[in-house]
Image (cartoon, rainbow, N blue to C red; front, side):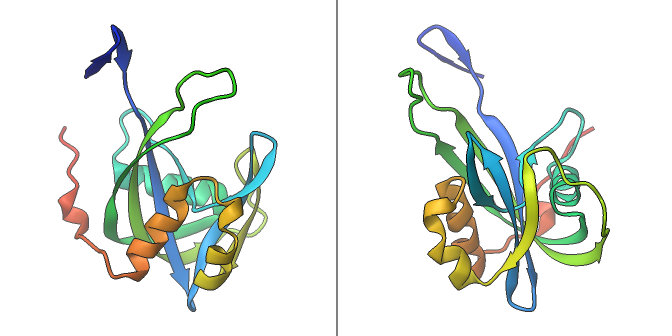
Length: 159
């Protein structure tokens, strides 16, 4: 717990997956604040869920792909810019995983706000940086491409 200016503060805990097939990265185009942006399959951790379970669930919900997690890429902390009303931007704590595709579920409805799943080369994703939902998108991919991997056992959920 952290207290700041007498207020309770807690970051948004999110997960993301870097899924690679034939040199392409599984991405999503989604609506965020009225803009069409690019992200990894990502979302919030839900109560009673492990980080790995959240990553598998979010990937399926946003892309219609079952994946197998292969490694933990890293933990990332980021604060969104201040809002137009001057209030502080939200704080995010993202846990990123590497994964390989297992099975697609054609025809499965995607999460609200997700326009489509798409496979992009690293160059295509890099060239579209002005459309990334946040700087977390490229940083996670850059770390993955640079070989950053930790065993999944580095993360533990206690009963």
